[in-house]
Length: 425
Image 1 (tube, rainbow, N blue to C red):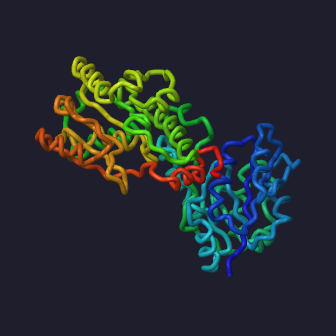
Image 2 (image 1 turned 90 degrees about the vertical axis):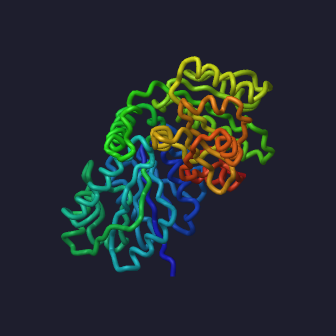
Image 3 (image 1 turned 180 degrees about the vertical axis):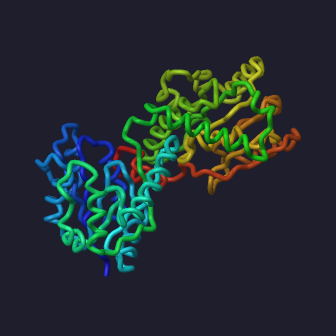
Protein backbone atom coordinates (compact mmCIF):
# COMPACT_ATOMS: atom_id res chain seq x y z
CA UNK A 1 0.00 0.00 0.00
CA UNK A 2 1.34 3.44 -0.95
CA UNK A 3 2.25 5.71 1.94
CA UNK A 4 0.76 9.15 2.14
CA UNK A 5 3.15 12.02 2.84
CA UNK A 6 2.48 15.52 4.13
CA UNK A 7 4.90 17.96 2.49
CA UNK A 8 5.69 21.30 4.15
CA UNK A 9 7.33 24.34 2.56
CA UNK A 10 7.95 27.12 5.13
CA UNK A 11 8.33 30.40 3.26
CA UNK A 12 8.82 34.13 3.71
CA UNK A 13 9.11 36.35 0.62
CA UNK A 14 10.40 33.58 -1.67
CA UNK A 15 7.84 33.83 -4.46
CA UNK A 16 9.94 32.63 -7.41
CA UNK A 17 11.66 29.90 -5.41
CA UNK A 18 8.32 28.57 -4.18
CA UNK A 19 7.03 28.46 -7.75
CA UNK A 20 9.96 26.25 -8.84
CA UNK A 21 9.54 23.87 -5.94
CA UNK A 22 5.79 23.43 -6.45
CA UNK A 23 6.32 22.70 -10.15
CA UNK A 24 8.94 20.08 -9.29
CA UNK A 25 6.44 18.26 -7.06
CA UNK A 26 3.74 17.96 -9.73
CA UNK A 27 4.89 14.79 -11.58
CA UNK A 28 4.89 12.69 -8.38
CA UNK A 29 2.43 14.64 -6.26
CA UNK A 30 -0.23 11.94 -6.36
CA UNK A 31 -2.45 12.04 -3.27
CA UNK A 32 0.23 13.51 -1.04
CA UNK A 33 -0.64 16.66 0.95
CA UNK A 34 1.25 19.87 0.23
CA UNK A 35 1.27 22.69 2.78
CA UNK A 36 2.78 26.11 2.14
CA UNK A 37 3.40 27.68 5.54
CA UNK A 38 3.70 31.42 4.91
CA UNK A 39 4.99 33.69 7.64
CA UNK A 40 3.82 37.08 6.45
CA UNK A 41 5.15 37.36 2.89
CA UNK A 42 4.50 40.61 1.01
CA UNK A 43 5.98 39.75 -2.41
CA UNK A 44 3.11 37.70 -3.86
CA UNK A 45 4.25 34.38 -2.38
CA UNK A 46 0.73 33.61 -1.18
CA UNK A 47 -0.65 34.22 -4.70
CA UNK A 48 1.72 31.55 -6.05
CA UNK A 49 0.39 29.04 -3.51
CA UNK A 50 -3.22 29.92 -4.39
CA UNK A 51 -2.58 29.18 -8.10
CA UNK A 52 -2.54 25.46 -7.22
CA UNK A 53 -5.79 23.96 -5.95
CA UNK A 54 -3.87 21.02 -4.44
CA UNK A 55 -1.86 23.29 -2.12
CA UNK A 56 -3.09 24.15 1.37
CA UNK A 57 -1.93 27.65 2.30
CA UNK A 58 -1.39 28.27 5.99
CA UNK A 59 -0.86 31.93 6.87
CA UNK A 60 0.90 31.68 10.18
CA UNK A 61 1.09 34.57 12.62
CA UNK A 62 4.04 32.91 14.32
CA UNK A 63 7.29 34.73 13.66
CA UNK A 64 9.37 31.65 14.48
CA UNK A 65 9.58 28.94 11.82
CA UNK A 66 9.61 26.07 14.31
CA UNK A 67 6.39 27.27 15.94
CA UNK A 68 4.71 27.80 12.56
CA UNK A 69 5.59 24.26 11.44
CA UNK A 70 4.44 22.67 14.68
CA UNK A 71 1.14 24.48 14.22
CA UNK A 72 0.82 23.31 10.60
CA UNK A 73 1.63 19.66 11.38
CA UNK A 74 -1.46 19.44 13.62
CA UNK A 75 -3.67 19.25 10.51
CA UNK A 76 -1.45 16.78 8.65
CA UNK A 77 -3.03 13.48 7.60
CA UNK A 78 0.12 11.89 6.17
CA UNK A 79 1.88 8.93 7.73
CA UNK A 80 5.17 10.78 7.29
CA UNK A 81 6.21 14.43 7.09
CA UNK A 82 8.58 15.84 4.46
CA UNK A 83 10.11 19.31 4.91
CA UNK A 84 11.39 21.16 1.87
CA UNK A 85 12.95 24.62 1.52
CA UNK A 86 11.55 26.88 -1.25
CA UNK A 87 13.82 26.81 -4.29
CA UNK A 88 14.74 23.16 -3.74
CA UNK A 89 13.69 20.52 -6.25
CA UNK A 90 13.40 16.91 -5.10
CA UNK A 91 15.01 14.79 -7.81
CA UNK A 92 12.69 12.54 -9.80
CA UNK A 93 11.86 9.36 -7.90
CA UNK A 94 11.67 11.14 -4.54
CA UNK A 95 8.28 9.65 -3.67
CA UNK A 96 9.47 6.08 -4.19
CA UNK A 97 12.72 6.86 -2.36
CA UNK A 98 10.73 8.01 0.68
CA UNK A 99 8.50 4.96 0.58
CA UNK A 100 11.50 2.62 0.31
CA UNK A 101 13.21 4.46 3.17
CA UNK A 102 10.31 4.13 5.58
CA UNK A 103 9.56 0.64 4.31
CA UNK A 104 13.04 -0.40 5.45
CA UNK A 105 12.04 0.36 9.05
CA UNK A 106 13.54 3.83 9.40
CA UNK A 107 11.65 6.44 11.44
CA UNK A 108 13.38 9.51 9.98
CA UNK A 109 16.02 10.53 7.47
CA UNK A 110 17.40 13.26 5.26
CA UNK A 111 18.10 13.62 1.57
CA UNK A 112 21.47 14.70 0.20
CA UNK A 113 21.46 18.26 -1.13
CA UNK A 114 23.19 18.98 -4.44
CA UNK A 115 23.58 22.48 -5.86
CA UNK A 116 22.22 22.54 -9.41
CA UNK A 117 23.80 25.88 -10.39
CA UNK A 118 27.19 25.08 -11.95
CA UNK A 119 28.87 28.16 -10.46
CA UNK A 120 28.22 27.04 -6.92
CA UNK A 121 28.38 23.24 -7.10
CA UNK A 122 31.07 23.37 -4.42
CA UNK A 123 28.46 24.81 -2.03
CA UNK A 124 26.32 21.74 -2.63
CA UNK A 125 29.30 19.52 -1.80
CA UNK A 126 29.88 21.40 1.46
CA UNK A 127 26.19 21.09 2.24
CA UNK A 128 26.33 17.33 1.73
CA UNK A 129 29.42 17.01 3.92
CA UNK A 130 27.72 19.05 6.65
CA UNK A 131 24.71 16.74 6.51
CA UNK A 132 26.88 13.64 6.81
CA UNK A 133 28.81 15.12 9.71
CA UNK A 134 25.56 16.18 11.35
CA UNK A 135 24.17 12.69 11.02
CA UNK A 136 27.30 11.18 12.57
CA UNK A 137 27.51 13.67 15.45
CA UNK A 138 23.83 14.19 16.17
CA UNK A 139 22.46 10.90 14.98
CA UNK A 140 19.94 12.71 12.80
CA UNK A 141 19.49 15.27 10.02
CA UNK A 142 21.72 18.34 9.91
CA UNK A 143 19.43 20.63 7.93
CA UNK A 144 15.68 21.14 7.73
CA UNK A 145 15.75 20.99 3.93
CA UNK A 146 15.04 17.45 2.77
CA UNK A 147 14.14 16.12 6.23
CA UNK A 148 11.52 13.35 6.42
CA UNK A 149 10.10 11.82 9.59
CA UNK A 150 7.15 9.64 10.47
CA UNK A 151 4.27 11.44 12.14
CA UNK A 152 4.62 9.07 15.10
CA UNK A 153 8.31 9.91 15.62
CA UNK A 154 7.57 13.65 15.23
CA UNK A 155 4.89 13.44 17.91
CA UNK A 156 7.15 11.33 20.14
CA UNK A 157 9.66 14.19 20.44
CA UNK A 158 6.86 16.81 20.55
CA UNK A 159 7.93 18.35 17.24
CA UNK A 160 10.39 21.19 16.89
CA UNK A 161 11.56 23.16 19.89
CA UNK A 162 10.32 26.79 19.74
CA UNK A 163 13.79 28.20 19.01
CA UNK A 164 14.36 31.05 16.48
CA UNK A 165 16.90 29.16 14.37
CA UNK A 166 18.67 25.80 14.00
CA UNK A 167 15.53 24.02 15.13
CA UNK A 168 16.66 21.06 13.03
CA UNK A 169 19.77 20.65 15.21
CA UNK A 170 17.74 20.39 18.39
CA UNK A 171 15.28 18.12 16.55
CA UNK A 172 18.09 15.76 15.50
CA UNK A 173 19.46 15.59 19.03
CA UNK A 174 16.03 14.77 20.44
CA UNK A 175 15.48 12.03 17.87
CA UNK A 176 18.79 10.48 18.93
CA UNK A 177 17.88 10.69 22.62
CA UNK A 178 14.55 8.89 22.12
CA UNK A 179 16.18 6.06 20.18
CA UNK A 180 14.20 6.36 16.93
CA UNK A 181 15.85 4.87 13.85
CA UNK A 182 17.36 7.59 11.64
CA UNK A 183 19.19 6.89 8.37
CA UNK A 184 20.26 8.97 5.36
CA UNK A 185 17.86 8.69 2.41
CA UNK A 186 19.48 7.42 -0.77
CA UNK A 187 18.22 10.23 -2.94
CA UNK A 188 18.87 13.90 -3.70
CA UNK A 189 17.24 17.27 -3.27
CA UNK A 190 18.47 19.64 -5.96
CA UNK A 191 19.12 23.04 -4.42
CA UNK A 192 18.38 25.90 -6.81
CA UNK A 193 19.92 29.33 -6.19
CA UNK A 194 17.75 32.27 -5.23
CA UNK A 195 16.07 33.99 -8.16
CA UNK A 196 18.34 36.54 -9.82
CA UNK A 197 21.46 35.35 -7.99
CA UNK A 198 23.12 33.69 -10.97
CA UNK A 199 25.18 36.70 -11.93
CA UNK A 200 25.27 38.50 -8.60
CA UNK A 201 27.98 36.52 -6.84
CA UNK A 202 31.02 36.09 -9.07
CA UNK A 203 32.90 34.30 -6.31
CA UNK A 204 31.19 31.05 -7.33
CA UNK A 205 32.32 31.46 -10.93
CA UNK A 206 35.85 32.44 -9.92
CA UNK A 207 36.18 29.41 -7.66
CA UNK A 208 34.99 27.07 -10.41
CA UNK A 209 37.38 28.67 -12.91
CA UNK A 210 40.31 28.21 -10.53
CA UNK A 211 39.38 24.61 -9.78
CA UNK A 212 38.99 23.77 -13.47
CA UNK A 213 42.29 25.47 -14.33
CA UNK A 214 44.14 23.61 -11.58
CA UNK A 215 42.69 20.27 -12.60
CA UNK A 216 43.61 20.86 -16.24
CA UNK A 217 47.11 22.06 -15.26
CA UNK A 218 47.74 18.74 -13.53
CA UNK A 219 46.25 16.58 -16.29
CA UNK A 220 48.14 14.61 -18.92
CA UNK A 221 46.58 16.76 -21.63
CA UNK A 222 48.17 19.99 -20.39
CA UNK A 223 50.06 21.82 -23.10
CA UNK A 224 52.12 24.87 -21.93
CA UNK A 225 51.53 26.55 -25.29
CA UNK A 226 47.80 26.72 -24.60
CA UNK A 227 48.39 28.93 -21.55
CA UNK A 228 49.74 31.57 -23.95
CA UNK A 229 46.59 31.54 -26.03
CA UNK A 230 45.07 34.87 -26.90
CA UNK A 231 41.39 35.76 -26.71
CA UNK A 232 38.79 33.63 -28.45
CA UNK A 233 35.49 34.53 -30.06
CA UNK A 234 32.08 32.89 -30.05
CA UNK A 235 29.10 32.85 -32.41
CA UNK A 236 25.65 32.16 -31.02
CA UNK A 237 23.22 30.93 -33.68
CA UNK A 238 19.54 31.75 -33.10
CA UNK A 239 16.97 28.97 -33.08
CA UNK A 240 15.79 30.03 -36.56
CA UNK A 241 19.24 30.63 -38.07
CA UNK A 242 19.26 27.51 -40.24
CA UNK A 243 15.56 27.04 -40.80
CA UNK A 244 12.22 28.04 -39.32
CA UNK A 245 10.70 25.00 -37.66
CA UNK A 246 6.91 24.96 -37.71
CA UNK A 247 5.83 23.52 -34.37
CA UNK A 248 3.20 24.30 -31.78
CA UNK A 249 2.95 27.58 -29.92
CA UNK A 250 4.31 26.29 -26.59
CA UNK A 251 7.42 24.90 -28.29
CA UNK A 252 8.02 28.34 -29.87
CA UNK A 253 7.69 29.89 -26.43
CA UNK A 254 10.28 27.44 -25.05
CA UNK A 255 12.66 28.28 -27.92
CA UNK A 256 12.41 31.98 -27.12
CA UNK A 257 13.05 31.44 -23.41
CA UNK A 258 16.04 29.19 -24.10
CA UNK A 259 17.52 31.88 -26.35
CA UNK A 260 17.50 34.29 -23.40
CA UNK A 261 19.15 31.68 -21.19
CA UNK A 262 21.77 30.82 -23.86
CA UNK A 263 22.60 34.50 -24.27
CA UNK A 264 22.97 34.90 -20.50
CA UNK A 265 25.35 31.92 -20.37
CA UNK A 266 27.45 33.31 -23.23
CA UNK A 267 27.58 36.86 -21.85
CA UNK A 268 28.77 35.63 -18.46
CA UNK A 269 31.27 33.11 -19.88
CA UNK A 270 34.76 34.52 -19.53
CA UNK A 271 36.32 32.08 -22.00
CA UNK A 272 35.56 34.40 -24.95
CA UNK A 273 36.44 38.00 -25.67
CA UNK A 274 33.89 38.68 -28.41
CA UNK A 275 30.40 37.36 -29.01
CA UNK A 276 28.61 37.48 -32.35
CA UNK A 277 24.99 36.57 -33.07
CA UNK A 278 23.56 35.15 -36.28
CA UNK A 279 19.85 34.41 -36.39
CA UNK A 280 16.64 34.57 -38.41
CA UNK A 281 14.01 37.29 -38.29
CA UNK A 282 12.30 36.12 -35.08
CA UNK A 283 15.38 35.42 -32.95
CA UNK A 284 17.16 38.59 -34.10
CA UNK A 285 14.15 40.73 -33.23
CA UNK A 286 13.80 38.98 -29.87
CA UNK A 287 17.50 39.45 -29.09
CA UNK A 288 17.50 43.22 -29.59
CA UNK A 289 20.85 44.90 -28.94
CA UNK A 290 22.34 43.17 -25.88
CA UNK A 291 25.51 44.43 -24.26
CA UNK A 292 28.74 42.93 -25.58
CA UNK A 293 27.11 41.12 -28.51
CA UNK A 294 27.48 42.09 -32.16
CA UNK A 295 24.57 41.10 -34.40
CA UNK A 296 25.98 40.16 -37.81
CA UNK A 297 24.11 41.28 -40.94
CA UNK A 298 20.40 41.47 -41.59
CA UNK A 299 18.31 38.35 -40.91
CA UNK A 300 17.24 38.07 -44.55
CA UNK A 301 20.84 38.14 -45.82
CA UNK A 302 22.72 34.95 -46.65
CA UNK A 303 23.71 32.85 -43.64
CA UNK A 304 26.96 31.87 -45.36
CA UNK A 305 27.80 35.51 -46.13
CA UNK A 306 27.30 36.57 -42.52
CA UNK A 307 29.41 33.66 -41.28
CA UNK A 308 32.24 34.43 -43.69
CA UNK A 309 32.16 38.09 -42.57
CA UNK A 310 32.79 36.96 -39.01
CA UNK A 311 35.61 34.63 -40.08
CA UNK A 312 37.24 37.47 -41.99
CA UNK A 313 37.20 39.64 -38.86
CA UNK A 314 38.65 36.87 -36.72
CA UNK A 315 41.48 36.09 -39.14
CA UNK A 316 42.34 39.80 -39.37
CA UNK A 317 42.49 40.02 -35.57
CA UNK A 318 44.44 36.76 -35.26
CA UNK A 319 41.98 35.21 -32.81
CA UNK A 320 43.12 31.96 -31.22
CA UNK A 321 39.89 30.07 -31.65
CA UNK A 322 36.20 30.14 -32.48
CA UNK A 323 33.34 28.64 -30.48
CA UNK A 324 30.07 28.01 -32.32
CA UNK A 325 26.97 27.49 -30.19
CA UNK A 326 23.60 26.52 -31.65
CA UNK A 327 20.76 27.77 -29.44
CA UNK A 328 18.43 25.10 -28.11
CA UNK A 329 20.60 22.96 -25.85
CA UNK A 330 19.06 22.11 -22.48
CA UNK A 331 22.34 21.34 -20.72
CA UNK A 332 25.01 23.71 -22.05
CA UNK A 333 26.91 25.34 -19.17
CA UNK A 334 30.15 27.18 -18.47
CA UNK A 335 31.71 23.90 -17.39
CA UNK A 336 30.85 22.22 -20.70
CA UNK A 337 32.08 25.23 -22.69
CA UNK A 338 35.40 25.08 -20.86
CA UNK A 339 35.72 21.37 -21.50
CA UNK A 340 35.01 21.99 -25.16
CA UNK A 341 37.43 24.87 -25.75
CA UNK A 342 40.13 23.93 -23.22
CA UNK A 343 40.18 20.23 -23.90
CA UNK A 344 42.71 18.17 -25.85
CA UNK A 345 45.11 20.66 -27.42
CA UNK A 346 46.16 18.41 -30.30
CA UNK A 347 42.72 18.39 -31.94
CA UNK A 348 41.97 21.47 -34.13
CA UNK A 349 38.23 20.77 -34.01
CA UNK A 350 35.97 19.37 -31.32
CA UNK A 351 32.31 18.54 -31.97
CA UNK A 352 29.63 18.45 -29.30
CA UNK A 353 26.63 16.65 -30.86
CA UNK A 354 23.02 16.55 -29.78
CA UNK A 355 21.78 13.43 -28.06
CA UNK A 356 19.50 11.25 -30.21
CA UNK A 357 19.94 13.57 -33.15
CA UNK A 358 22.12 14.02 -36.23
CA UNK A 359 22.75 17.68 -35.37
CA UNK A 360 25.44 19.47 -33.38
CA UNK A 361 25.06 21.61 -30.27
CA UNK A 362 28.45 23.33 -30.19
CA UNK A 363 31.75 23.30 -32.11
CA UNK A 364 35.24 24.44 -31.21
CA UNK A 365 37.78 25.40 -33.90
CA UNK A 366 41.42 26.10 -33.15
CA UNK A 367 42.97 29.02 -35.04
CA UNK A 368 44.67 26.76 -37.66
CA UNK A 369 41.25 25.34 -38.56
CA UNK A 370 39.60 28.71 -39.29
CA UNK A 371 40.91 28.87 -42.85
CA UNK A 372 39.61 25.37 -43.53
CA UNK A 373 36.02 26.36 -42.74
CA UNK A 374 36.07 29.58 -44.79
CA UNK A 375 34.20 27.79 -47.61
CA UNK A 376 32.16 25.57 -45.31
CA UNK A 377 28.52 25.39 -46.33
CA UNK A 378 26.82 25.99 -43.00
CA UNK A 379 24.61 23.14 -41.88
CA UNK A 380 23.18 21.97 -38.54
CA UNK A 381 24.09 18.40 -39.51
CA UNK A 382 27.08 16.73 -37.85
CA UNK A 383 27.86 14.46 -40.81
CA UNK A 384 28.20 17.43 -43.17
CA UNK A 385 30.80 18.99 -40.88
CA UNK A 386 32.73 15.74 -40.55
CA UNK A 387 32.77 15.23 -44.31
CA UNK A 388 34.06 18.77 -44.91
CA UNK A 389 36.77 18.50 -42.27
CA UNK A 390 37.86 15.09 -43.53
CA UNK A 391 38.27 16.56 -47.01
CA UNK A 392 40.44 19.31 -45.51
CA UNK A 393 42.50 16.72 -43.60
CA UNK A 394 41.63 18.24 -40.22
CA UNK A 395 41.43 15.88 -37.31
CA UNK A 396 38.44 16.06 -35.06
CA UNK A 397 37.18 14.72 -31.79
CA UNK A 398 33.62 14.20 -30.64
CA UNK A 399 32.47 15.01 -27.11
CA UNK A 400 29.63 13.27 -25.31
CA UNK A 401 26.28 14.53 -26.62
CA UNK A 402 23.97 17.01 -24.90
CA UNK A 403 20.22 16.95 -24.94
CA UNK A 404 18.65 19.50 -27.28
CA UNK A 405 15.19 21.02 -27.46
CA UNK A 406 13.69 18.73 -30.07
CA UNK A 407 10.14 17.84 -29.06
CA UNK A 408 7.08 19.26 -27.40
CA UNK A 409 7.78 16.87 -24.52
CA UNK A 410 11.18 18.54 -24.06
CA UNK A 411 9.47 21.92 -23.86
CA UNK A 412 6.97 20.74 -21.27
CA UNK A 413 9.71 19.17 -19.15
CA UNK A 414 11.33 22.62 -18.90
CA UNK A 415 8.22 23.88 -17.14
CA UNK A 416 8.31 21.08 -14.58
CA UNK A 417 12.04 21.72 -14.07
CA UNK A 418 11.17 25.30 -13.13
CA UNK A 419 12.88 26.87 -16.17
CA UNK A 420 9.77 28.04 -17.99
CA UNK A 421 7.21 30.27 -16.31
CA UNK A 422 4.15 29.52 -18.38
CA UNK A 423 1.97 26.47 -17.71
CA UNK A 424 1.63 24.06 -20.68
CA UNK A 425 -1.86 23.86 -22.13
